[in-house]
Image 1 (cartoon, one colour):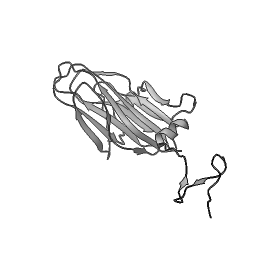
Image 2 (image 1 turned 180 degrees about the horizontal axis):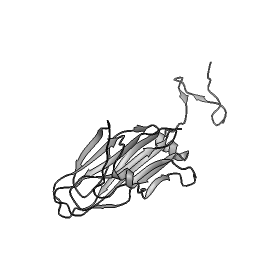
Image 3 (image 1 turned 30 degrees about the vertical axis):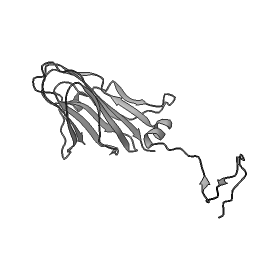
Length: 196
């Protein structure tokens, strides 16, 4: 195939310069951007949860019930000021939890699969539960995939890369407040999309 230089300004021919370079105009979009445009991008958010001790609590549980893979693009957390607490806060992400009070109690997140394309009516089929003080999780064979220490107050993202969740798999986030904590507001959120 030979591509020859066309007339400038014509909408049906290509420009080839004197160094045999084909001139094109292109744009790049991420999977997350394309998914949002297609109505397959969603947000999940626990809303604010108050913790009144320094004990570990599981505050977010998500299980994919869709046929297609659910991709976790990013995880965010917001930690307020701690009353009485000093030192670091520990946050851990666990893969494939199977049981626990957060699942038994089944309290839906304040935002469960909110579509990022405000013109789309597509929905997401999943379990997205928010926890309370002292909620637990069991992960038979599951492991902690990420842990991070941080101090209150802070707002940050957990850098876990793309997490692929096929149908039936799950994820949870747990937090252990600083020693001596008697009141701490926290919030967790996920940005996700369904693979096409």
